[in-house]
Length: 113
Length: 114
Image 1: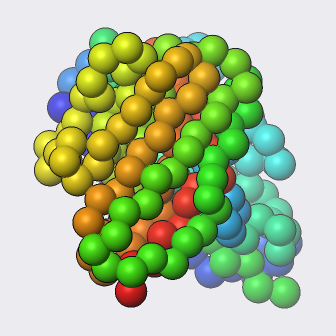
Image 2: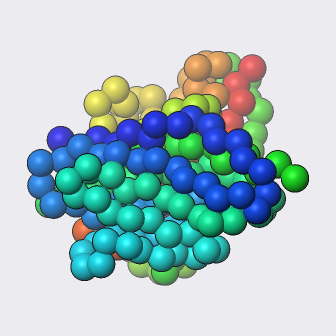
């Protein structure tokens, strides 16, 4: 079985500061990893995904994430956040053979001016 | 990519009534899913909507409470039946072809049961 843990339910940060949103997964087989963002009153949209190859993945809006197999982590980072990055962020995993993603609880990123 | 239109976007309903949520996709897709998103909780999969057959429900969800239709490859409905305040949540429609492809989501239906 696969599972996803997002360690922080809420991350407050000031504008232009760096941010890291943490995600750890549990799976005994190979995985595909995703980060989604949900703006208020909207559905989820894909930020980035890791399928294979380079462990550093770049996504939209200046976000990137690094896959660390030994630590079973896929943390999301941005070097300088904007007010518009305020949203809910979800980490998700698909383990080998499955077609349904398992989502974490989400992390609320709150960017203060 | 897929564009998903979900309606209504929100509704306030009386307990004991039912609400049907519609999900329209701009292309034919094999896999359609319905999720529930409760505050502070992860997305919980309710069921997989199968075209031409009954939906496949996850543990804790039953057809009598959440009947689903999938008449073709671009459309599905989810009904929340005999609602109670505990059903207040956001309901999301999603399509996903599986494996290394990403999931696409509708904008969600915010349901409040009073």
